[in-house]
Length: 281
Image (cartoon, rainbow, N blue to C red; front, side, top):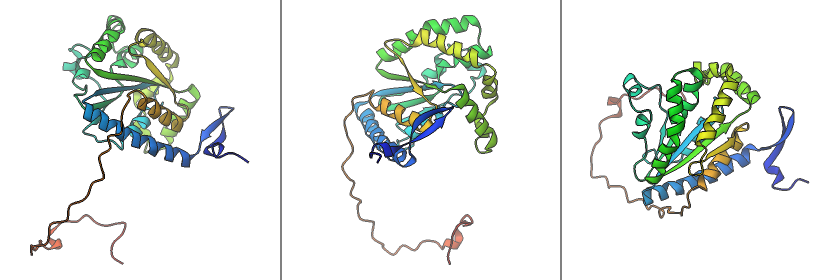
């Protein structure tokens, strides 16, 4: 008979290899537990006035967005902010490369999640030829200095690289093609990346060689199994800051204001949207 611990998992063959995969019920229970801990971390960041930056990079369809969603969905959007910058404007292209990212950095008591970041220059810009070789080499030289300045200024900087196999990325691309609700996730850049797998691999390795430093290391997340990647990343993130439980005491609702005879306008004077899914019997 399997132990309780074994019941949390099932054996699944992935790419010809048997792997232990977490069951949905245990995944949801653990996800909820970690999200509650993130709420505690949020209160600690707010109370202590910390400035927390988390960078999410990796292959297309590696699951970065899914992890960011699970981290942020239980947090206060006034404290935890997501930044996913698009193509730079003509004005931004004329600025110092890091300038538009500086404006998105956190103030005291804030947490910012970068869905891709200044590392675009070391990845897509390099591979697709959107920057010159001089600009690329300058980025590799100055990026560690830039991050050291951020850290010395008091910013807590965590960097995650989501690693996905060629086979799993292809599977996710095909899934997005088949599902109209997911097709928007496939940008022209994503499609082009399929034909430049080796070039992206080389660019990532060079990037790591220059920016995986003792002060600001890269943490690699095995993302072939999405549920595992989400839980593992959240657990690791929670361990990066020693925090205490500052959960406020239970709130007692005050009594509702007594009715003093105010007569509200008839409901017929308001424009209600059609109720397609319910209504009076």
